[in-house]
Length: 184
Image (cartoon, one colour):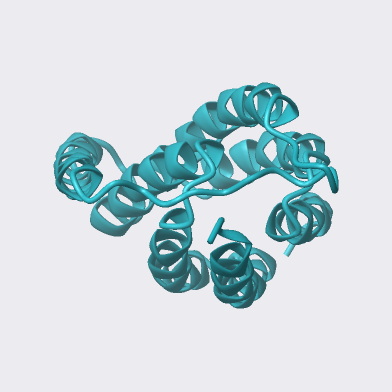
């Protein structure tokens, strides 16, 4: 456990609570969290999730810009459902990216190429759905968080693993809250 990991966890919790509440202020907290985690993960030889943090930083900037254009009267953003025809694209993208990243990581000294690649790939897909304000991002985050808990624990990243337990709980809560916020 190190101080940077603890600091990232604090910003991560703020990010997710604000995201669940559909507040645009989640994004600045997310930017700080992913910047710190990029270094923590690189030092732990979790290269895909380290690189993923660079994508997440860009996604945080994109999400902030997108969400600033979509507020409701109460200041929260409107959410929506993913069209049925979107699911095959989601599943194909997540599966193909997972396989590709795992194959690439197997060519390095990566600590956990398969789970590292899967977490990174599915996180890309889930983040794009989150930025688009699709409720269906949350079941993906639930699965990603479950795998992440084990991945980070296997690398003795105990604070980050505990953070992902909290992320799991918040993802379950967010899924319910966003479903309730859907237009009738």
